[in-house]
Image 1 (tube, rainbow, N blue to C red):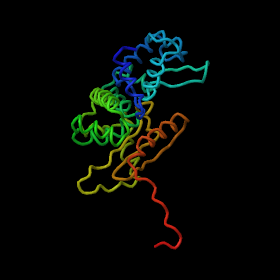
Image 2: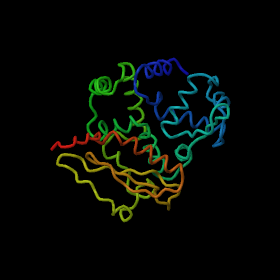
Image 3: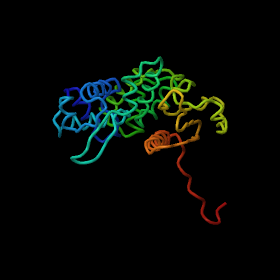
Image 4: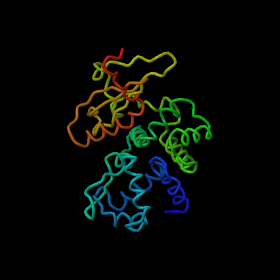
Length: 266
């Protein structure tokens, strides 16, 4: 781990919410080194540490693995001494898919996998990006970040959004062709649309990339002002886990449950 990464990691861990300590392009450099050495084979942490230049028990190795997992680039297999990791389907697509536009779709998917990145992108990218001082104040006062961690978060967030092409509001909503994972209109017509209030942007729709160009996404979601809705047709635990992660990332956009009125109260 470089001195800069050590400082960033130290700032990130001081009483602040969890987020990847490296940006998406740096995470993909690690994923590419993994692919060069191990392809998609399940790999023990000791061997992976040697590939990345870390000791097996170093915090740098654990933090890098956690960062790649946060972006959806790495899958965990097993626990304890039997634990192995391997590149995810998403990572392999980013590294290997040369079809026009396919890599861009996967990059946007990876960039919005970290929960806080998805939440802040909805507020900062979907609208005009506030100044750095505004963003840092929001992170420290409303999100519980330390000053140092807020600065690191903003740097990692900006690098990730820029690399994934998510610096404009219209890029938050993936293109409508099938390869993005958005179901064709005929397949989602039964989902009641959420009415957009005056002055509020239309709902944003999202779904994971299907495994083949002819496949339909296992689920599709959309969110608008105070509402989340969608449909699903799952056939594996991996698809269910991905849908759960997507719902968790969008949960913060919903209002908290209101307390039920006491008996007799009007």
